[in-house]
Image 1 (spheres, rainbow, N blue to C red):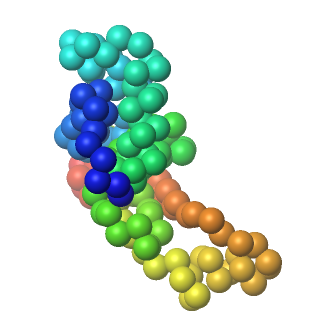
Image 2: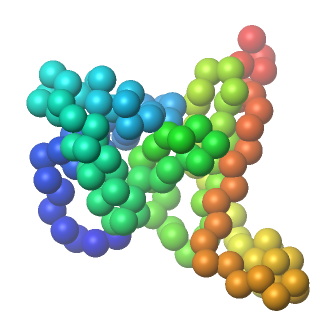
Length: 129
């Protein structure tokens, strides 16, 4: 993460992602931030791009949506538990070193540049209900 100061739009997007327990699409963010002055998708996409480059957010590939990063330990691999009922996304870290997934791929000559694991299922609240 860089120490760069965020623009107003970047801070608005980050604040909205931080306050949400579910992943939000760019259009969800645009709809929620219209009253704050964000009117065009490009404003949201630019903010998301910069926030992602700074390691402040993650893209949830399977949902085509974003969440705020709650673990700034980028030495470990990022994992996400995604509730298919309520949409809650929980971030977790796990080792991806010599004994982990990188070694399995490396045994086949594959060189891993980054890794994200997405688990889909039901959160404890939805499973109990």
